[in-house]
Structure formats: structure tokens, C-alpha cells
Image 1 (tube, rainbow, N blue to C red):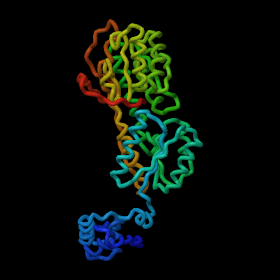
Image 2 (cartoon, rainbow, N blue to C red):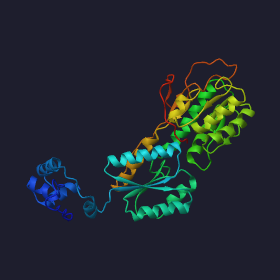
Image 3 (cartoon, rainbow, N blue to C red):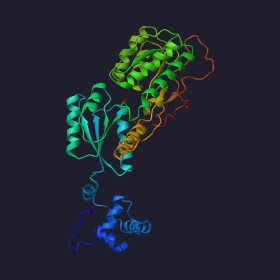
Image 4 (tube, one colour):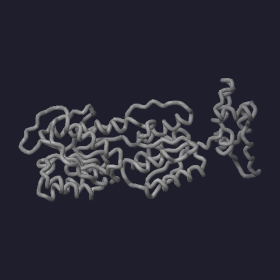
Length: 376
């Protein structure tokens, strides 16, 4: 089946957009042959295909998207259901999705949801059905919304980010556990008797993973496991939690994200204490401003954009009915100036542990600015 003929422009209107018939004439083939080349059909001889491709390049021909959709039964459009949020991780994951989709020749339709209730998620997928997307990616972080995605009756493939559905990026969870262990082991190696934890919301898989890694490291080191204090990823919640852990006598605090760590640093300094002289503080995510705080924040760098790109790779694999094998997106412990020896302890050189790559940042240049980003 060949696509509908492209309409010819009215005469006298100057240079016109090349159409399929122009390609066929220049290449010396039929319009049906050009159509097969455009569709990627394998039933065209190599030399003929090369002539057609050369003609397409010479003319600058762009296939009619609507016609191509009729023939291939594909819209070349990916849908995204995303939380209406400024949180750093989900925002960068969405950027990665858009970049990878565009590189693969797909447009992206994003449906933002104001809340993560199951009914809202279902309505978002209904909207995508109406736009005839080939597949979808859900950037919804909470358990209830992820369950709603899994339960939604969709007629197209769907991948969840961060891929905890067993087919997206399943190794992401365990990489975060390992990174949290490395953070905790780094603090223990500095002589701290134990490490307090300011965790994210318990209905986020990432928050649970980071808490699991922290707790595991303390248990394996046979240290006291303090009661974790929960925040909501914001600096304000970190400040409130920071006041609590400082009152409990903490000398080391591991926070579930960088913005909560910012709040903890303020709580420490308001008590007349110093970071890291009295209390060491570590964040997670490595937001752009983390290197420019006072002191620069030790944290874990995560490539959220790469997670978004990989979700697109997995989705395109499902559309092609093939399995895409991807390794984990490994986080990296970034040691800066917010961590130091426990009070009264002389630091002994050694590794940070955890099997997670580690590096120390050079001092940040005061002239190098950094845009403010949301936290996660």
C-alpha cells in the first residue's frame, strides 16, 4: 500500500515543498518504490535504495507524517504522564525522555498531572489514547501512582521511570541502595560512631532504597541504628528534621536528597555548631548548586537524564518486540567539604567503601554560577 499522493501547491507561488512524486522522478523509480524506501521496507534492491536516498537528500524531501502513519499504523509519537512538579530528579528524567525520543524521530506529548491519585493517572492515559500515541512513559514517583499505572488498561506499551516495573531500569533501585551504603561507610570511616538519617517520603521507592542502604551499612558495622526522621524532599522539612537530629547529638547526618541537606546545615549552624567541624552532612542527587554551598556539599551524583533516555530505549524495544538489555545507571559518591572527621578524631586515610565510585571535587570557583534547581 502506498501513501496518499502529496498535494501539489498552487501555481505561481515560488519554490514548493518537494513531494514523493518529485523523488520518484529524480531517482527514476515508481512512487511505490519511494514509499517502500521511506517505510524502511527491505524489499528494495540496494542500488535502487541508494538512488532514492540520494534523491531524497538532494531535494530535502520530508515524508508526510500523516501519510506515513496511515501506512505504518504508527504515529511516531510517545506519550509521557508526569507529575506536575519542580523536583530535580523527575524534571531531568523528563528532559532525557524528550532528548532520546527526538533523536529517534519521535515527537513527545506530555500530560502533566496536578496530583498522583489513581483516578488522575487513569484520566491522563485516556488523554494519551485520544492522541494515538505509540507508547508511553510514566514519570510518577509515588507507590500509589505507580500501582495505578500498572493497573491501567492501556492498548500501547508503557514503561515506568525509574523503571521499577521489572522491565524499565530495574537496577536503579539497587544502585541507590549501594550508593547509600557508600555514604554511610564514608561517614563511619571518618570516625563517627553512627550516622543519623533524614529520609524522604516512605511511599517513594527511591526514599526506601536510600534508607535501606543506610540501615544495612550500620547493621553490618554493628553500630547503633538511630530512628530515621522523615521529610518531604524540601529544605524546610530538612530544617525541621535537622533540629531534631542535632538535639539528639548527631555528629553525622545522611539526607535523602540535597535540599533536605541544605535545611539540615541551617539547623546545625543555628545551634552555633559548624559543618563539618561538629556535624558532617551528606545529601543525595548532586543538584547544580550543591558544589557552591558553604561548605560545598558531599553528595551522590545521579544521571537522571540517562535514566530518561534508557526508558525511551526500552519503550522503542517493546514497540519493535525486542528485548533491550541495559546495565545499571551507577551513582557516584562526590566527596566535598561538608564531611570531616568526627569531633576529636584524627582522620585516617582510606576508601569510602560500598563499591561505588568516589571522587573529590576541586574547590568551586566563586565566579562560576549555577542555576537553582528543584530538589529530590
